[in-house]
Length: 240
Image 1 (cartoon, one colour):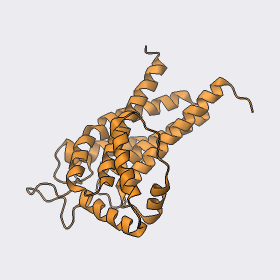
Image 2 (cartoon, helix red, strand yellow):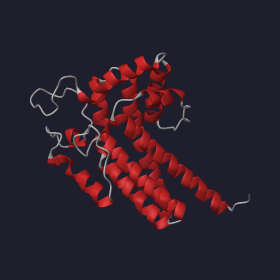
Image 3 (cartoon, helix red, strand yellow):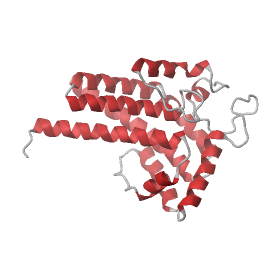
Image 4 (cartoon, helix red, strand yellow):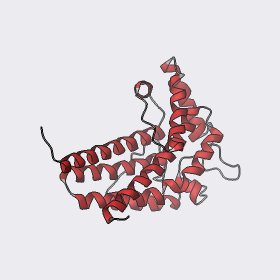
């Protein structure tokens, strides 16, 4: 089958967008709840991605891969990661709304790091809730207290990229560009604002390299995706 250069370029753009959508879906899932056995099997068997050139993403993935490669017994490995998930993000036997005693875990909510909110269900999470509603998005809130959980923010980006993918498949360049602009504004206005502090907290509470690596890899991915989106926008404007 013969295709034009334009068709090949469009196919490449669609595939890149599909990959970005899948990346956001996986990152969101890994932060939402503990890893189950089927997912752990899949992670262990997954091929290593090409190096991105982003030092944080590549080092984060190295830490994750190192942990996965050390798992000989999947049920035991799943249990160990479940314990570490609770240590890192929940805190054993603690109430995240208690004040005056310092954090007991790296609570994965934007308001904790950006506004210093002491209550997870506070009004500090309202800005992301408004953005979700305006976009027609409803986050998966399995065991999640507020909309500004990192899993929800990553899922929202998955939702926006899925919309971009649909627009690209239909050949609607204007709609795709608008969605990319929305993605960049959200990345810069929300997860990138607090990801470094969140990562530092995970370093304190997580006991395995898996969640430490996941945090670093996620920050690297967000930085790299923001760079990609700026570049595409510049190309569309004809920036030199």
